[in-house]
Image (cartoon, rainbow, N blue to C red; front, side, top):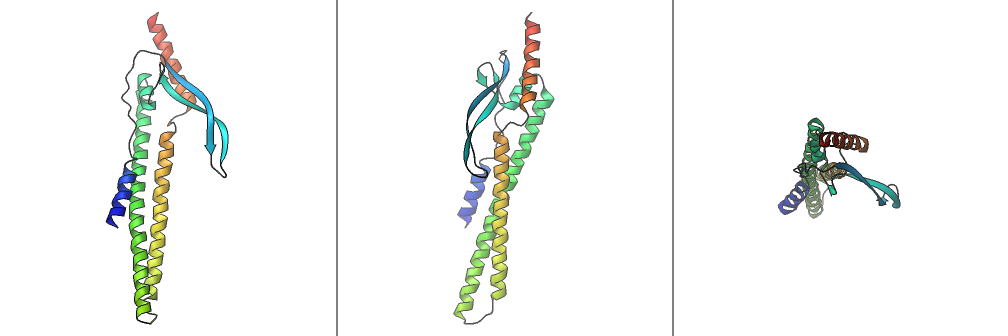
Length: 186
């Protein structure tokens, strides 16, 4: 059981990382690149549809969203992106702990219920029914905790993979930066 708990915690904690935002200004234009492509949407049933993807870029290279706003001369917005990501990492970590604790309670409750039932059967009596019932309830609570922890991790992962701020804000930042670069060059 310790090995299972350690594997769950390590596996979930491995996803808790803020993307690298160390890109520096190269002096190239900032842009917001859009691309169309297929996307699998699975709610309520799997359906492929065309989706528009976008990402911030410096020249021809994609850059991290935090670095993009820092390069664009918007340190407060870059800090906002950083803080939101840190909150998502905290959510992932809390989800991992909830998942691990839920797994321990689930396994412990299930094992206790099975042991109590075996003792009850061996002794040919009905004593221990309360222990079985409470153990099954504990296992159920553990299972629900595992679900909640897994959901917290998945929602944070989905948000981390998506853009922290909106498309229009990124386009405005790129336009302001590029206008400033053009004015400085003339």
